[in-house]
Image 1 (tube, rainbow, N blue to C red):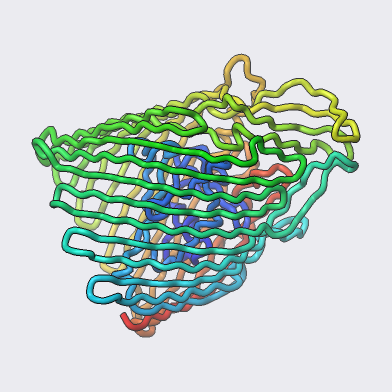
Image 2 (cartoon, helix red, strand yellow):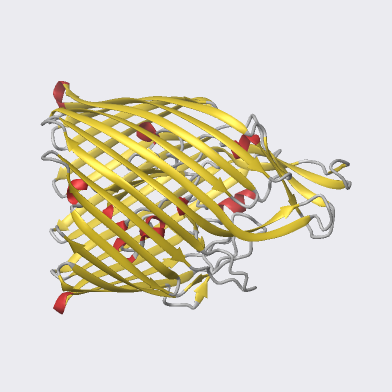
Length: 601
């Protein structure tokens, strides 16, 4: 889906559809995966905003509903499909998503955009950029959106979403060699949710539907020095605060990170890059009686060092890149993530490459510290209890990849990738023997399920993409992916459903075609058609969908747009909630209009 079709509240996940497996769970939640293992928090993908990790060590993933930014200020979204552990570290497992914003130099003047419609009930953004003397620029912005709930057969309509956010960025050219960037954001909002909590009193469960309150702020600084065309260094630091109150738990988290990188050109045109990082995170958790974190207050440390070397074996033809990252964290201890990549460029318009790498996904607080009790049947004193495992191990991946890129003409580009991934120590739940529990009263039965690492297996697949400038006014992009997953549990594992549940949560086939057309009289027409295969373990049938944007520039400074989303069906399911007690929400057909005015540029 093209970036201009999205508003800020859903821009990041929606824009990833052509690069990842993206399924909308409800109005404010998405499931995102790269090469499989998709889920709401994208546990297998590391997500960054301008190099700031938005990964949460609580659930080992990303709250996508908190990653909002004015779409007009996003420069690009980089998606690395495949492991990126050597450069980015743990949890860059199946892929990396890095959302990069524009320099304030490129966002001078004012911008005002506003609109609304059926699902997007209202949204607005105000941004202004200017100069600070002769060597510095700035911008500041504020935005707000209100999104309506999805379709729910029982008419509960619990998942509406409202959020406001503001922020700034400044960029200084201190001298010809040094630059400094400072930026920060502040947000506050509400996300609708519905859950069923266990209670030890009859009827042993309680359904709650109301808004979760979310608040957060971040501040980032980055200094960069360029010593020559082949040598530079950078120092980045950031602070991030998350304050989230859901219906069954609350999280307050502070994170401080310091990262240093140095790139050096040396013997025989080699390029050596090395760096180190330190991260400190402090969390405090509060929850209902049937959810217990032990400990509920944690202070965790992460320290890493990496080195990567790029060697031109044959000048302008054959290049070898190899390196490794070593890190230590309080969840799993020491981890090593080596990689090697060989790229052959027989002509300027062709590249063949192959790579092998190791990546890890470290345990989270939920894996090690959580004990969660859930009801089984309303009115019966029978509960399932997930029990965290302090000995839960790191999940590991060894990846083998290869690809071919060719540009046969100036207007046509083809890209093909293949991969084979081998996984070990994947997450399972080991069912124990049910036992009676007398306290808290009244007496009840508990079936324990202990978190463990007793699944392994492999995935392999194919990814094809093409971009074609068919005519000066007509461009199209096409993408297709094939994913095959084969998993199995250890002989002594009791979690016999885990392989089917995990493999069946990702589509085998995905495809999309996007057209961008510049029409007469300053009109633009951008239709996108996409196909997603069945999710066997989730009970989601295959579906086709189409989104269309019609834009018009009556004058260069003003854009008017009409957007239709999910036009082929009144409503359809894409992914169930990660909470089994939450009812299925279906994604509805929607329309909205948007006006954008720029001035002073």
